[in-house]
Image (cartoon, rainbow, N blue to C red; front, side):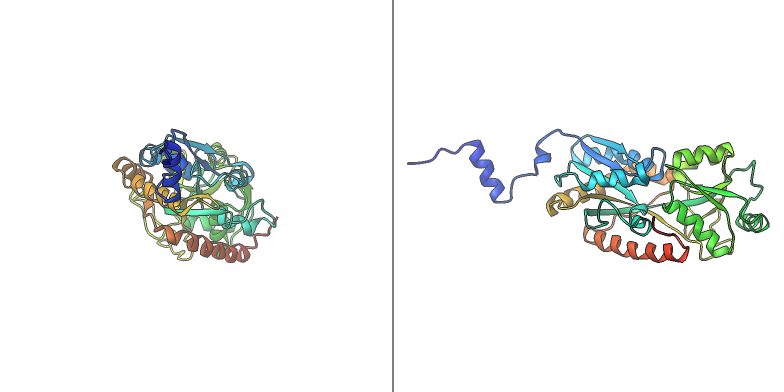
Length: 323
């Protein structure tokens, strides 16, 4: 007796042979990208600029979900607890590899509870001041001011232990100067207070302040990058101004929850490569000053582990104590 071939039996046979597409690919379900960063941050600007091309490359609508609570831990915890089916992904920055040095306990293991998929590139960071409160126009003038008013000026960041915080702490440590740290719950509120004069200066990502630099609401002092960037050709680096050890790069990467199948991770990686090679995305990245170069997928996890060790050393050097 011959068993009739039904659609169900055919799909089961294909799945057993490894030929059936992931469940997500068979539906029109949107893919949610969790960002453990506030709206207006560099990672937010990058993700939203790439959103149309990512949606096209992945074949699904993209929903950007900003979750900056507890410095981003809330969003990362939700990503870690998500089903490893490709329906929930994340875009993260250096902050995620700093957390283990900042907190004695975390509701997840970094990077063990995640699947690093693609280290996409880096976004320029620079130090900016409120021009109405800080007369300095370059790094040497700012350092001289910090020394003459030791501990009086205050600087903001997107949160204690974030890459923006550590960038400024690196400057203070290398120059033997002091200033008060005012942590915020995100970059947006920090930049607003910086322009309003509630704080004096701070490290920021270029995309988050580009418009404010053009309007004159903020003044750029120096870039933390190794070289100048095309989007700000007239702004020198700290290294150019005599502070060769003040170099901090802010990278960003696409990750998924732990257990994401290799085939699905590869599909997402290939989509990320295609999205950031899209002409419209490339133009947006150039305007923001971002340096794009998607690393091979097999380099992502080793990179995360090496960065964990790097920031553990930096945190110890500047005396950042775990809470």
